[in-house]
Image 1 (cartoon, rainbow, N blue to C red):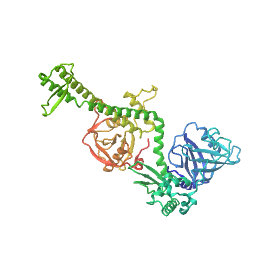
Image 2: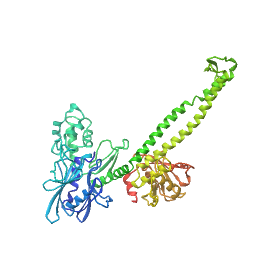
Image 3: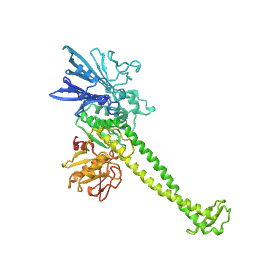
Image 4: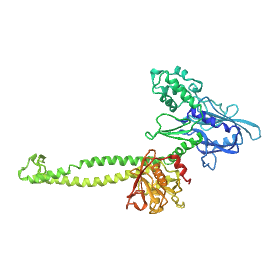
Length: 566
């Protein structure tokens, strides 16, 4: 959790310039998000307040949101009491993730009124509450009744009670030497003890303190505590950290030294959060709309992977077919030595000179025993051929659903129906009923412009991939795809692109692949003339030759700069 109490403190400091700003407009673009447009210094600033269970936060945003035609009731209450008012104070409560904004406005008859917006960032219990000057609740985003919450009631007309606290210490009121009073070195887990005793700390910052010194002692702990807390008081350095080996990533307002190998510095905390939450917010919206689709694809993958394992086990069982044929041959060659009722035939294998013992059915004649072994051989041979065919088909289905799974991590809400329709056409899902009058939308490819001005197109689902590769692109255009990794088709619309454009197209190919979070991703590229779609192949599947390979590491921020908004 990077948006902790220390981060909240820095955010509140960065928002102080909004004090005395006028609230121009209030919107609720999403169920859990309020946008307050504040006019200050002749500019409009969008203040985002979110109580999303995973992404609760507060910051300025430059992102444009689509607002519903009919504003929700919560937004209407905020507009009634706050629009046209002036922000008089923005403060953090203690060192907790609780923020209050005091607003002075006027009621319907022109009398001055005072209202306070309270943002409580508490994970799934986050809430946004509006109270009057007597701290009586006017409205709360989440209502808590006495029956549902034993600690407090959040309902219009009730007195506002703050969430129950754990009586932790404010780290800004404590020195490193004083920290020793709260730590039991014999118990270990120093980071967890710090977390339990100090308000506003997150595992991110306590781990940083512990990792600042090789060992935690009565001397090194105060040093590490004072060192980290000293840096938190300095001018913020908004950073995004990522570890390519573990895939772990975090943001913070200062550099961290704990096992991160990729650091991106932003101009402001607000730009940092816009970048960090934008992609996650889009993925969350896609997840909500395509939750059943994601489950279906995962179920299909699991089904075919289990089927492949069973088919391979069965295939192993056909490997003794040659032995069955050999037994039939040896019985035929030694039939004069076998008597009715013999249980075994012991003879020499004339292929390797070794002695071999062959079981016989005492109820059958020697000739019938030989024929039985030949039948087993032919049956296993036929079974082996069918198993090989089934294994190939199953592997093809696994590859297909791995591609669909990868596409679901990058698609937008508008692309979901394309994948549903494709799965229905392939016979994996039932076709949804569609309005016949509704026109089929044209295929929209994601467009990027390279640093050197070349247009790069990306297909984010199989329909888009087929259209891009087989119809949109010309034979001389360069085509890109990750090597042996599920991913998107990428094409540069230039017969002679620059080396820089080729590298950027490879980076896009790596980003829109299953290995998108990794570094040094192998990417093949060749001309479209060398890319072929086999007859009867599944959507998005192609073969290619005459390729070259280069390695690319995706740079999210650079990709966003290249992107053309659709």
